[in-house]
Length: 244
Image (tube, rainbow, N blue to C red; front, side):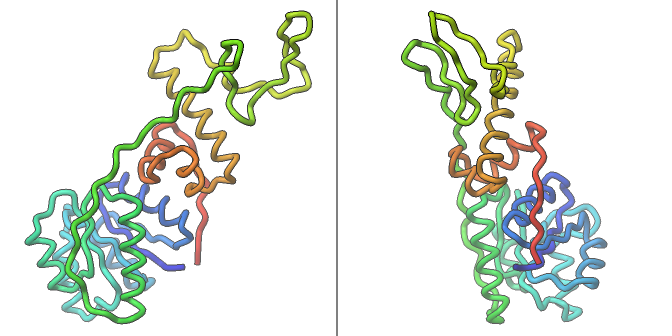
């Protein structure tokens, strides 16, 4: 896979992009400003650079000009910004950037742009004019758990306890694992109860899909950028797969 340098002063953006790219098998270097980007560029030439335009010490366009002037612009550079004008994007492209990503960056657009950058990097192609980025779709939420024929709520798949209904009794067998849903309190405020349910829901799917974010996104019906944010919000830790 590729070595990708992410340069952005926002820690949340750096963490989000690094999680996504690690999950795709890439090696990722993170820089919070232009000084760190220079050092990482010198230590390990990246295959692709994701470079934010607006940074407090030196803006991305100035750093791009610096690399071009020093004949260091021998790797594809993709500019990023949440509020840059089209003139800024055109200027960056004229200097040597190959593309432009508008924040918030969708997963599909990010991976497609990086794939194109790697192809152009291998072919030594010249920069292309930036394309209008796709807007992220509004993510949905998982539907409420279905009910059984007797009106009782059906347990989540893979979490169902054994139930004994003989003689009209409903009892839990001690040798079966209890569902985490059974520990949820209905006395919690709605937001806390919803977060608790979502935590169980996503942990279940992560375990079931072996930690694959692609399959979990497909199963839960969420765009992967939103899925990463949701897991981070719920405090669910992810294991990183580091590529070479």
